[in-house]
Image (cartoon, rainbow, N blue to C red):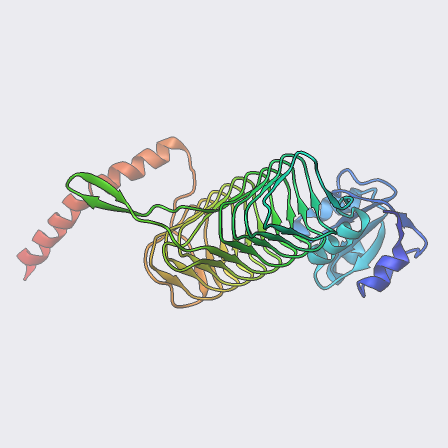
Length: 337
């Protein structure tokens, strides 16, 4: 949607350096922006790209404004303000209210007149769909589910049963919410399945990525609080509790009954074992495994970065000899006593 630069500056309380009548109608990166593009700079290491940009305007901090050849919107948080501006310039699609003929709706389901239910959707008994909800094609909403106002289930999303979505949630294609978790008891004869009886409670403004699974609770509910962001291909086990505004990056896994605090950030492929507690404001590095409670905020990491194979092989060889070296040191210490 085209908008004047002066309007953007006023709406987001940014200092404008440049012509307020410039028209912006798209967003782009610094390297490929055009004369009607909005771009941003949030990291000073990209100042070289800033100097060469053809963008009409760049959202940046005060320290970087002097390097911009384009108009500037000076912001205390350039990336966040850029995101909000981009949502105005490129608003999400709107859909006419209604239910597709091919949708299968249970007799006791309740659907707001302002909702859009796309083709081949199934909605189960006693489930409710709130105002201005978009249920994308192929999605399945089982019994006793509630989808809050302005949620978007993009396509092929599954809510198995007893799932509550708060307001303005976004679920991407292939997300499965409320399936059985791994509940099995071992006997001499083999595994015995433990019935998974809980539901899933998801707060407001939560986004869940493509092909991510959030298991139902075993007895109590699995809980995801307001503002949580879960990336693609993640697994959230049964009875997990994730605090507000925590972010979980791609291919991470949180095992059953773990409690993750508020405002935490779990980097890609991180793993959280079950039945532990992580306090608020913790950052977990990529591919790290957390196996014990974390009681102090901070950054926690525990993996090796890649290096030339020859160097890595030398380190592995030395590591294998570590036990022998410890024994030799112990013998020398005893001999010197």
